[in-house]
Image 1 (spheres, rainbow, N blue to C red):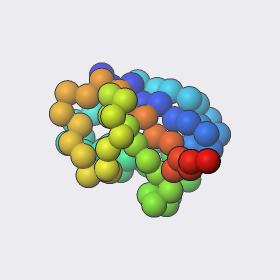
Image 2 (cartoon, helix red, strand yellow):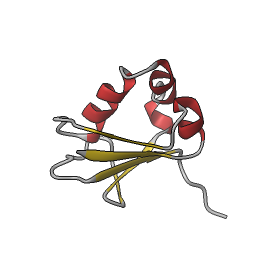
Image 3 (cartoon, rainbow, N blue to C red):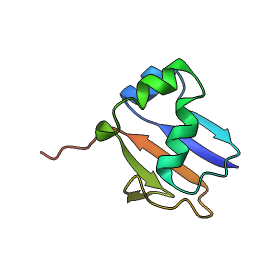
Length: 82
């Protein structure tokens, strides 16, 4: 089981802040493909991958990063400094 966390407008589009699921996805990108098919909200949230950032077990990663034995994946919009 893996915990999926959604932040900011991703949470708003999907309608939940967290879900838990079984996956055999080898990478974050493959997980996103799985998630896109879960609902219209998921598809909308992940429609433009250039606006998505991810963290696996609280480490920022690229979307092609392997999931391995990850326990948590978080998705959020790009962060800005200031």
